[in-house]
Length: 151
Image 1 (spheres, rainbow, N blue to C red):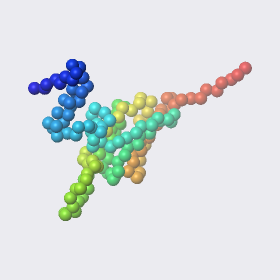
Image 2 (cartoon, rainbow, N blue to C red):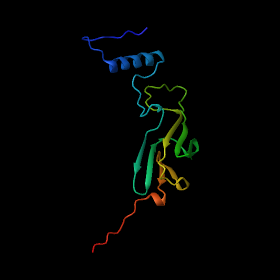
Image 3 (cartoon, rainbow, N blue to C red):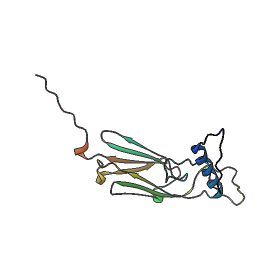
Image 4 (tube, one colour):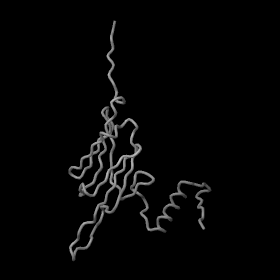
């Protein structure tokens, strides 16, 4: 049974929700603060950035130590999915983990792709631990310069 705590006769719902979240996290032994960026993102999801230019969109996804064979990219109905698995480091027989701040395991990131993207011309490259995905705009959706005639 949850007890609502009152301080100075003022009810603070945000504090109560934060306290409830901490109690649920403690129940399931989850971290108090999730570093994820969205409601379904997990701490085991790689960070990514998406930039927009007149030519299209570029996504940079940090995947240090991963190779091409452990990644899968797909685009379906304007949804881009990046799937992969980051395998754990192989430790020697006498090695003990002193500190572990990196993540490992299976991940999936799903992004809505703007409708202006030409899905047939998407390019992807993995270089130096960074996955770069270029989503070009369709020609009809690119901004056009109109020549102004002055009379």
